[in-house]
Length: 495
Image 1: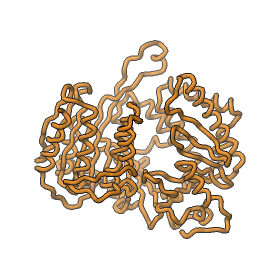
Image 2: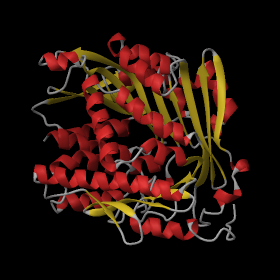
Image 3: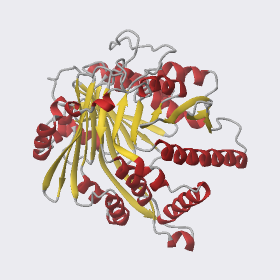
Image 4: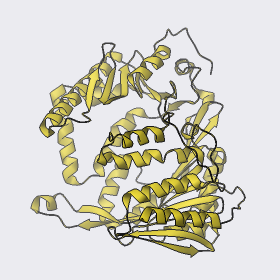
């Protein structure tokens, strides 16, 4: 069996490599010319709840974990085939809770493909992925068994010995595995292996070699890049719990001239056409989170601090529960973001798709009689309050309560109500048209004014209060959070 062969080979490789390294930054494995990089310390909410795993005895999460729930759904036949990809992603999330990690886009390019007719040709070229190199890096400190187990499960599910070839390779004195699948393009190669205290999984021919050469000093690393070193010192990168970096100029060059028109439209929508590098950090002071940014525009560096605990306003701090483990009051141009992010998304589409979505948006405003910009966006303030209360029973990360500052409850309530009612009608009509009977998505409103999604389980919920538009991960969670948000102004919590 292909799966048993793969399991045996990767277990043999893992046991044959001795562990040693010295706590070096994870960015020393990231090539300096990477396009997009995200690094983070382990997310405590994702860590396995059972005893700490070892190299020989991995953790076995129970039913009260993401892995346990997904396993139960799969074994009982409740997981549809098309949902398995998302399930496999979900079961890999505990790796992010166990290890420091880096997600890296090393290279990407696109190509134009032929269109089928005059109508399509008039809408511009259709773009497809031409080449991709990416990497996921874990600091396992020798505890790589969890990574190998997840890798073995996924490979066993999606490939077999009739179409796949597994080989053992080496580079820079390190052994690694390579998996090629006949159904994929020649460059679409999976590779994985251990680099001392790190475990690396890559996609794209040559990606593992690039990481290994960077690790051994043959290629410059992002950690030694002069601009990154300076930016990191200025906004606290060394103490960050999460950080991300986008090499905007290199990204544009990598995608090629055939995408230039779309890229130009996107950067114009985001007012980022003259930016070359963009670097963000999230830090922590007690339970409060800091959020800072350094970007380079026309040869000048610009520093922005969006969340500074020293500047948290009391009127916003008072709605945060004492029980919340992580909090942030973020000062951002909310109106600008909500107005421009959709424009950027449309700009990234083909001309045909962009026109289709613009027609849908215009029709929505006509049907609801709502000026979305005037009735909703213009009433948003610049402060967003975020906290992780109430906690999610499955410890799912980013199960947050988010409160957007507003200045006119009635106008915002009317606008959001009109939009959600229109969305509800659209979903019902679509379900009837497609004869959908399973996992039917619905938008509902409760007697206490809470809007929520329902798709078998109750999903995200929203309510407009006197001073905030509040969103949480379920109706019960929102009601619990509203006890703090809607309490009298005289009641205050500790910072």
